[in-house]
Image (cartoon, rainbow, N blue to C red):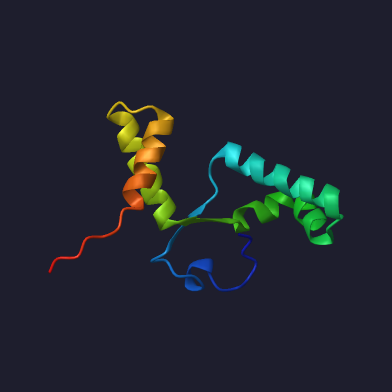
Length: 106
């Protein structure tokens, strides 16, 4: 998310549903740059061209928005992998656990 407004982005979203963080990982930053570069090559987007031309000014304005449910699923998969499950099995187990109906107490 590119945040060019005067208000901080975290004042404009539901932080109970999403986690916000600045881009810090060099690989993520390069991946973002590459995506914008590809977008510009396909669309000739003036905004994209402006961002690329002034990358050092813009990169700090990007905010990584991650759904909290996604983070919880990733954490569960990580824990299942640590317990010895292979990647695919850990993902399927975490998915199955997430989709089980909640039992109600009567």
